[in-house]
Image (cartoon, rainbow, N blue to C red; front, side, top):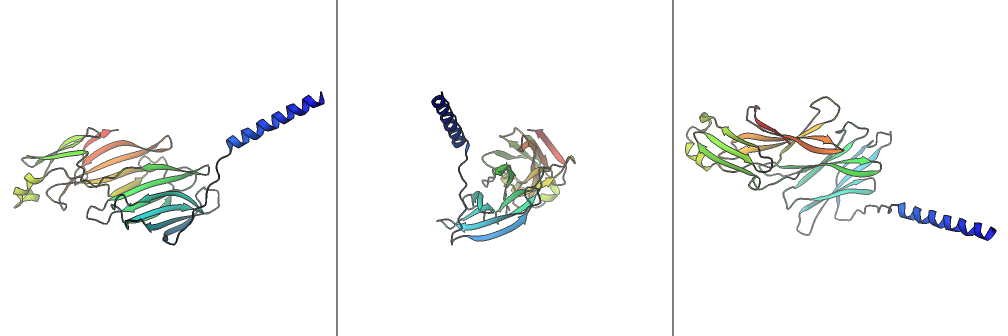
Length: 261
């Protein structure tokens, strides 16, 4: 009888050991700073809202082609590493703020293009139960919008605009006085939509959660001739930002057409 009890106990202990092993997460490896890295920015804030501060550091280095690569680190552990997106971005920085209205701060990781379009990238990361989650990331294109949008001058100071991704369509009416002496250039208007150059974070409905609106300029005869702006608004849903609506807005700020997403 005693022998039987001992065997049962051994089996139970072995089962607990196996369960424990299966549930154990792999230990995080500490981030190693190399001689090629430099500190771009460092901030110390209470990320969890528990009264204890954490150190967030943005490191920068160059890859084999001389393009920048940035690594975001919290204390001694990597959050994410992002490159220049084939040279589109040359600068980067971070901002810590509460965007989702919950306890603690999120890390806003910006990347910048220094060209005339001034394109920007934004990724937002949230610390959730000890793990970093990406809650906002919108692809940014530098191809003048040719893969997604279609624009054409229709004559009589009108430009057709179509977004193949969302189905948004409109005819943009131009102000003839802006083109006095340059009327012959109007026929050259074709597809030209700048990359996202601004992210507007604002609590639109005063519920404590920031909505994010991306801004893209729609271009006429030259880059100095914006004829509208394309604005996409994102709202938190199921823990991350999802597109809510897209709007085409004229240069005075009036909404020309809007579509729910």
